[in-house]
Image 1: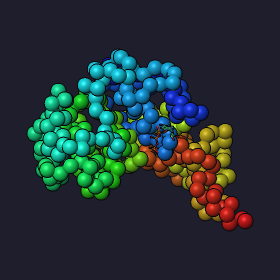
Image 2: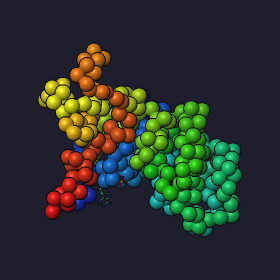
Image 3: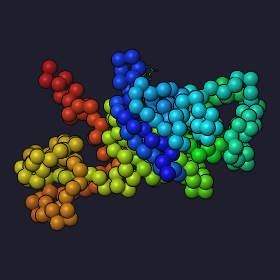
Image 4: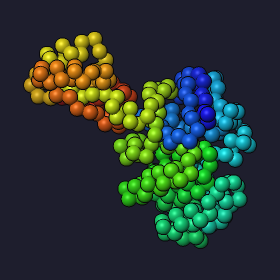
Length: 303
Ligand SMILES: Nc1ncnc2c1ncn2[C@@H]1O[C@H](COP(=O)(O)OP(=O)(O)OP(=O)(O)O)[C@@H](O)[C@H]1O
């Protein structure tokens, strides 16, 4: 069953097209990583799903209904980001208590165990926490609420490396013990890919890829060899990344549509093949200009 269905979903802010006829379907009890460059439209998509904003055109359905102003969606989902505002008069302990009253599946014991593990002071106020501590506290809310739809928008903002690691581990343990639909937007795909099932890559307000992480890891191949040999094998094909690899040689990345036999023949032509990490594939597929940042410096050197 699909928990989320978007059909031709568009969102404009004035003249800016943040989402552009985006369609996707997210099945129940999946852990999805939402990735994309700055400004790709990730937060906009998540806010539309959470029912915080309305689409300009197209449709978004969550639990088979329109999420905007929907009591059903707000009772069954939680949206965690670093802009969450908490009642200033409540202590952290009181916030947890209130959350327990609102979320039907709230796990008080888990909340308290995480709270102690991360050494929070029950009498402290949310406004007094550092950036990383706020994210950690918000993460506790997201995990302990056990909502059927849990959305984390850049949840690790400000967290140090050790806390980020703990977060990913806690997320995985929770998900295995209590499966639910979890969407995590992140710029750190390499850190989080081991806990994800699917990756949703968006670019310029559209879905660029939506596939299991295991497939994304096999999606591309990196080929290194003489430019003339590479040209012979890749004529007319789309190359998603290219850089020099010594005189007359290059490293190119492209979709791996080659058979094992073809890769073997390439080896005989002096071409080495290697896998390309999921996070590199996402970066290459969403690069803004040919040559990347190097182009900026090449130009500068010529002046
Ligand atoms: N309230 C708003 N008013 C005007 N423009 C907005 C608003 N919110 C987002 N945008 C614009 O919409 C585009 C998509 O923004 P969005 O926040 O969804 O991207 P994102 O993928 O989450 O980016 P990041 O990774 O930097 O957080 C950006 O160009 C952004 O400037």
